[in-house]
Amino acid sequence: MITHQEISLLSNYASREGVAISFYLNLDGIARGKKTWEAETKQLLRKARAELDWLNIDKKLAQTAENDLKKIQDIIGSEAQTAKCKTLAIFVSSSDDFCQIYKLPVAVKSKIILDTDFYIRPLIAIMDGRYRIGVILLDSQTAKLFEVYMGEIVEHTEFYQRIEKDQKTTLETFMKRDKHLMQRKDERIKNHLVRTADLLLAHYLRRHFDKIVISGHYPLIAHFAHFLPKKLQENIIGKIEIDLKSRPGEILQQVNKLEQEYICRKEEILLKKISDEISRDGYAVKGLNNVIQALHSHNIRELAVADDYEAGGMQCVVCNMPYLEGKICPTCGGELVEVTDVIDEIVEEALHQGAPVRQACQSEAMYNLDKIAALTKFKPGEIMKSLYEISPDISGI
Ligand SMILES: [Zn+2]
Image (cartoon, rainbow, N blue to C red; front, side, top):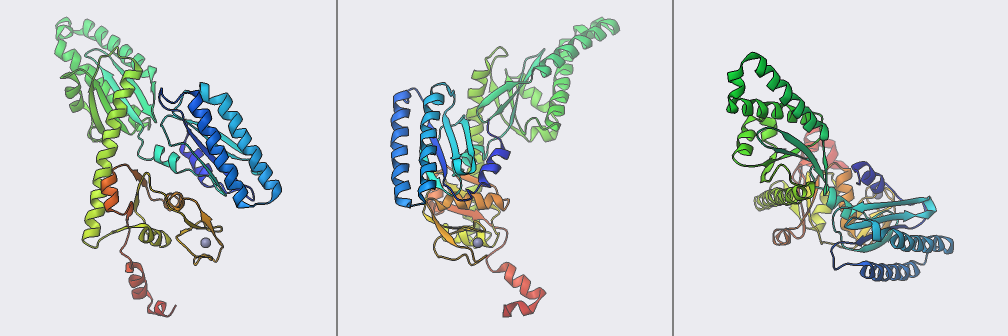
Protein backbone atom coordinates (compact mmCIF):
# COMPACT_ATOMS: atom_id res chain seq x y z
CA MET A 1 0.00 0.00 0.00
CA ILE A 2 1.44 3.36 -0.99
CA THR A 3 2.02 5.84 1.83
CA HIS A 4 1.90 9.65 2.02
CA GLN A 5 5.69 9.65 2.56
CA GLU A 6 6.23 7.77 -0.71
CA ILE A 7 3.99 10.21 -2.58
CA SER A 8 5.93 13.06 -1.05
CA LEU A 9 9.20 11.42 -2.20
CA LEU A 10 7.84 11.09 -5.74
CA SER A 11 6.48 14.63 -5.80
CA ASN A 12 9.80 16.10 -4.66
CA TYR A 13 11.74 14.07 -7.19
CA ALA A 14 13.36 15.94 -10.04
CA SER A 15 15.68 14.13 -12.40
CA ARG A 16 19.09 15.80 -12.37
CA GLU A 17 19.53 15.39 -16.09
CA GLY A 18 17.63 12.36 -17.43
CA VAL A 19 14.04 11.54 -18.21
CA ALA A 20 11.62 10.56 -15.45
CA ILE A 21 9.10 8.03 -16.75
CA SER A 22 5.71 7.53 -15.06
CA PHE A 23 3.71 4.55 -16.23
CA TYR A 24 0.20 3.55 -15.15
CA LEU A 25 -1.46 0.37 -16.37
CA ASN A 26 -5.13 -0.32 -15.62
CA LEU A 27 -5.55 -4.01 -14.75
CA ASP A 28 -9.12 -3.70 -13.60
CA GLY A 29 -12.03 -5.93 -14.48
CA ILE A 30 -12.59 -9.32 -16.06
CA ALA A 31 -12.68 -7.85 -19.54
CA ARG A 32 -9.16 -6.53 -19.18
CA GLY A 33 -7.15 -9.75 -19.46
CA LYS A 34 -3.44 -10.35 -20.12
CA LYS A 35 -3.75 -9.71 -23.86
CA THR A 36 -5.38 -6.32 -23.31
CA TRP A 37 -2.64 -5.26 -20.86
CA GLU A 38 0.14 -6.36 -23.17
CA ALA A 39 -1.38 -4.63 -26.18
CA GLU A 40 -1.95 -1.48 -24.19
CA THR A 41 1.60 -1.54 -22.80
CA LYS A 42 3.04 -1.91 -26.31
CA GLN A 43 0.94 0.98 -27.58
CA LEU A 44 1.98 3.24 -24.67
CA LEU A 45 5.65 2.36 -25.12
CA ARG A 46 5.40 3.14 -28.84
CA LYS A 47 3.98 6.54 -27.96
CA ALA A 48 6.82 7.10 -25.47
CA ARG A 49 9.48 6.17 -28.08
CA ALA A 50 7.99 8.63 -30.56
CA GLU A 51 8.11 11.30 -27.88
CA LEU A 52 11.73 10.46 -27.08
CA ASP A 53 12.65 10.95 -30.75
CA TRP A 54 10.80 14.22 -30.79
CA LEU A 55 12.48 15.47 -27.59
CA ASN A 56 15.83 15.20 -29.36
CA ILE A 57 17.82 14.79 -26.14
CA ASP A 58 21.42 13.75 -25.62
CA LYS A 59 22.12 10.30 -27.14
CA LYS A 60 23.33 8.74 -23.89
CA LEU A 61 20.25 9.94 -21.98
CA ALA A 62 17.97 8.79 -24.77
CA GLN A 63 19.55 5.31 -24.55
CA THR A 64 19.03 5.26 -20.76
CA ALA A 65 15.38 6.23 -21.28
CA GLU A 66 15.03 3.51 -23.92
CA ASN A 67 16.41 0.98 -21.40
CA ASP A 68 13.87 2.24 -18.87
CA LEU A 69 11.06 1.60 -21.35
CA LYS A 70 12.34 -1.96 -21.78
CA LYS A 71 12.47 -2.30 -18.01
CA ILE A 72 8.78 -1.27 -17.82
CA GLN A 73 7.88 -3.88 -20.43
CA ASP A 74 9.73 -6.57 -18.41
CA ILE A 75 8.03 -5.53 -15.17
CA ILE A 76 4.60 -5.72 -16.82
CA GLY A 77 5.49 -9.14 -18.23
CA SER A 78 6.48 -10.52 -14.83
CA GLU A 79 4.18 -8.62 -12.45
CA ALA A 80 0.86 -7.85 -14.14
CA GLN A 81 -0.47 -11.41 -14.05
CA THR A 82 0.04 -11.85 -10.30
CA ALA A 83 -0.29 -8.25 -9.19
CA LYS A 84 -3.73 -8.64 -7.54
CA CYS A 85 -4.41 -4.93 -7.83
CA LYS A 86 -6.38 -2.61 -10.09
CA THR A 87 -3.51 -0.50 -11.36
CA LEU A 88 0.20 -1.09 -11.64
CA ALA A 89 2.19 2.14 -11.38
CA ILE A 90 5.89 2.26 -12.27
CA PHE A 91 8.19 5.24 -11.78
CA VAL A 92 11.62 4.90 -13.31
CA SER A 93 14.59 7.12 -14.00
CA SER A 94 17.75 5.05 -14.39
CA SER A 95 20.02 8.07 -14.78
CA ASP A 96 19.31 8.61 -11.05
CA ASP A 97 19.02 4.89 -10.22
CA PHE A 98 15.36 5.32 -9.40
CA CYS A 99 12.72 2.61 -9.87
CA GLN A 100 9.55 2.16 -7.83
CA ILE A 101 6.58 -0.12 -8.46
CA TYR A 102 3.23 0.36 -6.77
CA LYS A 103 0.17 -1.87 -6.79
CA LEU A 104 -2.82 0.42 -6.50
CA PRO A 105 -6.20 -0.73 -5.20
CA VAL A 106 -8.06 1.71 -7.48
CA ALA A 107 -8.43 1.68 -11.27
CA VAL A 108 -6.55 4.51 -12.98
CA LYS A 109 -6.47 5.31 -16.70
CA SER A 110 -3.48 3.72 -18.46
CA LYS A 111 -0.91 6.34 -19.29
CA ILE A 112 2.79 7.03 -19.85
CA ILE A 113 4.39 10.38 -19.16
CA LEU A 114 7.98 11.43 -19.92
CA ASP A 115 9.13 14.48 -18.02
CA THR A 116 11.82 15.81 -15.70
CA ASP A 117 9.66 14.89 -12.71
CA PHE A 118 7.12 12.15 -12.01
CA TYR A 119 3.45 12.41 -12.89
CA ILE A 120 1.68 11.80 -9.58
CA ARG A 121 -1.78 13.29 -10.12
CA PRO A 122 -3.52 9.89 -10.25
CA LEU A 123 -1.81 8.92 -6.99
CA ILE A 124 -2.97 12.10 -5.31
CA ALA A 125 -6.50 11.49 -6.57
CA ILE A 126 -6.38 8.05 -4.95
CA MET A 127 -5.00 9.27 -1.63
CA ASP A 128 -7.02 12.47 -1.54
CA GLY A 129 -10.23 12.17 0.36
CA ARG A 130 -9.46 8.60 1.38
CA TYR A 131 -10.11 7.99 5.00
CA ARG A 132 -8.79 5.44 7.41
CA ILE A 133 -12.06 3.90 8.53
CA GLY A 134 -12.64 1.93 11.70
CA VAL A 135 -15.45 -0.57 11.17
CA ILE A 136 -17.01 -1.85 14.37
CA LEU A 137 -19.01 -5.02 13.86
CA LEU A 138 -21.06 -6.07 16.87
CA ASP A 139 -23.88 -8.15 18.25
CA SER A 140 -25.29 -8.21 21.77
CA GLN A 141 -22.36 -10.22 23.15
CA THR A 142 -19.22 -9.54 21.24
CA ALA A 143 -17.55 -7.11 18.82
CA LYS A 144 -14.86 -7.03 16.15
CA LEU A 145 -12.88 -4.09 14.82
CA PHE A 146 -11.69 -3.78 11.21
CA GLU A 147 -9.65 -1.07 9.59
CA VAL A 148 -10.35 -0.09 5.99
CA TYR A 149 -7.90 2.02 4.05
CA MET A 150 -7.49 2.51 0.30
CA GLY A 151 -9.55 -0.48 -0.66
CA GLU A 152 -8.00 -2.92 1.81
CA ILE A 153 -9.40 -4.34 5.03
CA VAL A 154 -7.59 -5.76 8.06
CA GLU A 155 -8.97 -6.97 11.35
CA HIS A 156 -7.60 -5.78 14.69
CA THR A 157 -7.89 -9.26 16.22
CA GLU A 158 -6.71 -8.03 19.62
CA PHE A 159 -9.93 -5.98 19.85
CA TYR A 160 -12.10 -9.09 19.64
CA GLN A 161 -9.87 -10.97 22.11
CA ARG A 162 -10.05 -8.11 24.58
CA ILE A 163 -13.86 -7.89 24.32
CA GLU A 164 -14.19 -11.65 24.84
CA LYS A 165 -11.88 -11.54 27.87
CA ASP A 166 -13.75 -8.59 29.42
CA GLN A 167 -17.06 -10.29 28.81
CA LYS A 168 -15.87 -13.39 30.65
CA THR A 169 -14.53 -11.39 33.61
CA THR A 170 -17.76 -9.39 33.87
CA LEU A 171 -19.86 -12.54 33.87
CA GLU A 172 -17.70 -14.09 36.59
CA THR A 173 -17.98 -10.94 38.72
CA PHE A 174 -21.76 -10.88 38.31
CA MET A 175 -21.94 -14.54 39.19
CA LYS A 176 -20.10 -13.94 42.45
CA ARG A 177 -21.89 -10.71 43.34
CA ASP A 178 -25.44 -11.19 42.31
CA LYS A 179 -26.99 -14.00 40.35
CA HIS A 180 -30.12 -11.95 39.68
CA LEU A 181 -28.13 -9.13 38.10
CA MET A 182 -26.41 -11.63 35.82
CA GLN A 183 -29.82 -12.79 34.65
CA ARG A 184 -30.77 -9.29 33.60
CA LYS A 185 -30.00 -9.44 29.91
CA ASP A 186 -30.49 -5.74 29.25
CA GLU A 187 -27.94 -4.90 31.93
CA ARG A 188 -25.40 -7.23 30.35
CA ILE A 189 -25.92 -5.78 26.88
CA LYS A 190 -25.58 -2.26 28.19
CA ASN A 191 -22.36 -3.19 29.93
CA HIS A 192 -21.07 -4.75 26.68
CA LEU A 193 -21.90 -1.63 24.62
CA VAL A 194 -20.20 0.67 27.14
CA ARG A 195 -17.04 -1.49 27.15
CA THR A 196 -16.99 -1.67 23.35
CA ALA A 197 -17.41 2.11 23.10
CA ASP A 198 -14.53 2.64 25.57
CA LEU A 199 -12.25 0.31 23.68
CA LEU A 200 -13.16 1.92 20.37
CA LEU A 201 -12.30 5.33 21.78
CA ALA A 202 -8.91 4.02 22.91
CA HIS A 203 -8.16 2.84 19.34
CA TYR A 204 -9.36 6.13 17.89
CA LEU A 205 -7.09 8.10 20.23
CA ARG A 206 -4.16 5.97 19.07
CA ARG A 207 -5.01 7.20 15.56
CA HIS A 208 -5.87 3.83 14.13
CA PHE A 209 -8.64 5.46 12.11
CA ASP A 210 -10.33 8.83 11.58
CA LYS A 211 -13.85 7.85 10.44
CA ILE A 212 -16.21 5.21 11.80
CA VAL A 213 -18.72 2.79 10.32
CA ILE A 214 -20.99 0.89 12.70
CA SER A 215 -22.12 -2.50 11.50
CA GLY A 216 -24.26 -5.35 12.77
CA HIS A 217 -28.03 -5.55 13.14
CA TYR A 218 -30.62 -2.91 13.94
CA PRO A 219 -31.75 -1.75 16.46
CA LEU A 220 -28.54 -2.67 18.36
CA ILE A 221 -26.20 -0.66 16.08
CA ALA A 222 -28.42 2.42 16.42
CA HIS A 223 -28.33 2.06 20.23
CA PHE A 224 -24.57 1.60 20.16
CA ALA A 225 -24.08 4.96 18.41
CA HIS A 226 -25.63 6.66 21.48
CA PHE A 227 -23.02 5.10 23.74
CA LEU A 228 -20.14 6.66 21.79
CA PRO A 229 -18.49 9.86 23.00
CA LYS A 230 -19.28 12.97 20.97
CA LYS A 231 -15.94 13.05 19.11
CA LEU A 232 -16.61 9.55 17.81
CA GLN A 233 -20.26 10.26 16.99
CA GLU A 234 -19.17 13.21 14.84
CA ASN A 235 -17.03 10.87 12.74
CA ILE A 236 -19.60 8.20 11.96
CA ILE A 237 -20.00 8.10 8.18
CA GLY A 238 -22.66 5.42 8.12
CA LYS A 239 -24.16 2.20 9.44
CA ILE A 240 -24.30 -1.19 7.74
CA GLU A 241 -26.81 -3.96 8.38
CA ILE A 242 -24.61 -7.05 8.25
CA ASP A 243 -24.08 -10.33 10.10
CA LEU A 244 -21.27 -10.85 12.59
CA LYS A 245 -20.08 -13.85 10.60
CA SER A 246 -19.73 -11.85 7.37
CA ARG A 247 -16.49 -12.21 5.47
CA PRO A 248 -14.11 -9.19 5.43
CA GLY A 249 -14.61 -8.91 1.64
CA GLU A 250 -18.37 -8.35 2.08
CA ILE A 251 -17.77 -5.71 4.74
CA LEU A 252 -15.18 -3.99 2.56
CA GLN A 253 -17.56 -3.76 -0.39
CA GLN A 254 -20.21 -2.00 1.67
CA VAL A 255 -17.72 0.29 3.41
CA ASN A 256 -16.27 1.36 0.04
CA LYS A 257 -19.75 2.33 -1.10
CA LEU A 258 -20.37 4.35 2.06
CA GLU A 259 -17.01 6.07 1.74
CA GLN A 260 -17.69 7.00 -1.87
CA GLU A 261 -21.05 8.53 -0.92
CA TYR A 262 -19.38 10.44 1.91
CA ILE A 263 -16.66 11.78 -0.44
CA CYS A 264 -19.35 12.90 -2.91
CA ARG A 265 -21.25 14.72 -0.16
CA LYS A 266 -18.06 16.52 0.91
CA GLU A 267 -17.30 17.37 -2.71
CA GLU A 268 -20.78 18.82 -3.26
CA ILE A 269 -20.39 21.02 -0.19
CA LEU A 270 -16.98 22.29 -1.34
CA LEU A 271 -18.12 23.07 -4.90
CA LYS A 272 -21.20 24.87 -3.62
CA LYS A 273 -19.07 26.90 -1.23
CA ILE A 274 -16.72 27.92 -4.07
CA SER A 275 -19.69 28.89 -6.31
CA ASP A 276 -21.28 30.93 -3.51
CA GLU A 277 -18.02 32.77 -2.82
CA ILE A 278 -17.52 33.53 -6.51
CA SER A 279 -21.07 34.79 -6.98
CA ARG A 280 -20.57 37.32 -4.20
CA ASP A 281 -17.03 38.29 -5.16
CA GLY A 282 -15.73 36.59 -2.06
CA TYR A 283 -12.89 34.26 -1.22
CA ALA A 284 -12.68 32.05 -4.29
CA VAL A 285 -11.39 32.02 -7.86
CA LYS A 286 -12.17 29.91 -10.91
CA GLY A 287 -10.48 29.20 -14.22
CA LEU A 288 -6.92 28.15 -15.02
CA ASN A 289 -5.45 31.64 -15.23
CA ASN A 290 -6.98 32.87 -11.96
CA VAL A 291 -6.01 29.72 -10.09
CA ILE A 292 -2.40 29.99 -11.30
CA GLN A 293 -2.30 33.63 -10.20
CA ALA A 294 -3.65 32.67 -6.78
CA LEU A 295 -0.93 30.00 -6.55
CA HIS A 296 1.73 32.61 -7.35
CA SER A 297 0.44 34.66 -4.38
CA HIS A 298 0.35 31.56 -2.13
CA ASN A 299 -3.36 32.25 -1.90
CA ILE A 300 -5.01 28.81 -2.22
CA ARG A 301 -6.99 27.50 0.75
CA GLU A 302 -8.46 24.47 -1.03
CA LEU A 303 -8.22 23.45 -4.68
CA ALA A 304 -10.87 21.63 -6.72
CA VAL A 305 -10.13 20.29 -10.19
CA ALA A 306 -12.12 18.11 -12.57
CA ASP A 307 -10.47 14.69 -12.49
CA ASP A 308 -10.27 14.48 -16.29
CA TYR A 309 -8.99 18.02 -16.87
CA GLU A 310 -5.61 18.27 -18.57
CA ALA A 311 -3.92 21.29 -20.14
CA GLY A 312 -0.48 22.07 -21.51
CA GLY A 313 1.61 24.83 -19.93
CA MET A 314 4.97 25.85 -18.56
CA GLN A 315 6.89 25.29 -15.36
CA CYS A 316 9.87 27.01 -13.77
CA VAL A 317 12.89 24.67 -13.58
CA VAL A 318 14.12 26.40 -10.42
CA CYS A 319 11.08 27.04 -8.17
CA ASN A 320 8.64 24.62 -9.93
CA MET A 321 5.94 27.30 -10.16
CA PRO A 322 3.44 26.58 -12.98
CA TYR A 323 2.67 29.13 -15.71
CA LEU A 324 0.47 29.24 -18.77
CA GLU A 325 3.09 30.91 -20.93
CA GLY A 326 6.39 32.81 -20.89
CA LYS A 327 10.10 32.07 -20.97
CA ILE A 328 11.45 33.36 -17.67
CA CYS A 329 9.91 32.89 -14.21
CA PRO A 330 8.90 36.34 -12.87
CA THR A 331 9.27 35.01 -9.30
CA CYS A 332 12.84 33.69 -9.38
CA GLY A 333 14.23 34.36 -12.85
CA GLY A 334 14.49 30.63 -13.65
CA GLU A 335 13.90 29.21 -17.10
CA LEU A 336 10.36 28.07 -17.99
CA VAL A 337 10.02 24.72 -19.75
CA GLU A 338 6.99 23.18 -21.43
CA VAL A 339 5.02 20.56 -19.51
CA THR A 340 2.44 18.12 -20.91
CA ASP A 341 -0.07 18.63 -18.12
CA VAL A 342 0.21 21.88 -16.17
CA ILE A 343 -2.70 20.72 -13.97
CA ASP A 344 -0.38 18.10 -12.47
CA GLU A 345 2.11 20.86 -11.61
CA ILE A 346 -0.69 23.02 -10.13
CA VAL A 347 -1.84 20.11 -7.96
CA GLU A 348 1.73 19.49 -6.75
CA GLU A 349 2.37 23.17 -6.03
CA ALA A 350 -0.96 23.53 -4.14
CA LEU A 351 -0.06 20.51 -1.99
CA HIS A 352 3.42 21.94 -1.48
CA GLN A 353 1.78 25.15 -0.22
CA GLY A 354 -0.29 23.07 2.22
CA ALA A 355 -3.65 23.34 0.44
CA PRO A 356 -5.86 20.24 0.23
CA VAL A 357 -6.67 19.17 -3.33
CA ARG A 358 -9.92 17.56 -4.40
CA GLN A 359 -10.06 15.97 -7.84
CA ALA A 360 -13.79 16.21 -8.37
CA CYS A 361 -15.88 13.76 -10.34
CA GLN A 362 -19.06 15.87 -10.45
CA SER A 363 -18.61 17.07 -13.99
CA GLU A 364 -21.50 19.51 -14.27
CA ALA A 365 -20.58 21.47 -11.13
CA MET A 366 -16.89 21.48 -12.16
CA TYR A 367 -17.78 22.57 -15.69
CA ASN A 368 -19.59 25.60 -14.23
CA LEU A 369 -16.39 26.38 -12.36
CA ASP A 370 -14.30 26.22 -15.57
CA LYS A 371 -12.96 22.79 -14.50
CA ILE A 372 -10.60 24.29 -11.93
CA ALA A 373 -11.38 26.53 -8.97
CA ALA A 374 -10.22 27.25 -5.44
CA LEU A 375 -11.17 28.75 -2.13
CA THR A 376 -8.67 31.49 -1.35
CA LYS A 377 -7.20 32.89 1.85
CA PHE A 378 -7.70 36.51 0.81
CA LYS A 379 -9.23 38.49 -2.04
CA PRO A 380 -6.91 39.56 -4.88
CA GLY A 381 -5.26 42.85 -3.92
CA GLU A 382 -6.23 42.52 -0.27
CA ILE A 383 -2.70 41.65 0.95
CA MET A 384 -1.07 44.44 -1.05
CA LYS A 385 -3.60 46.91 0.40
CA SER A 386 -2.86 45.84 3.97
CA LEU A 387 0.90 45.83 3.32
CA TYR A 388 0.57 49.39 2.01
CA GLU A 389 -1.21 50.36 5.22
CA ILE A 390 1.73 48.96 7.25
CA SER A 391 4.30 50.66 5.05
CA PRO A 392 3.12 53.27 2.53
CA ASP A 393 6.60 53.11 0.85
CA ILE A 394 5.61 49.77 -0.66
CA SER A 395 3.65 51.55 -3.37
CA GLY A 396 6.94 52.69 -4.87
CA ILE A 397 8.28 49.13 -5.29
ZN1 LIG B 1 10.82 30.22 -10.57
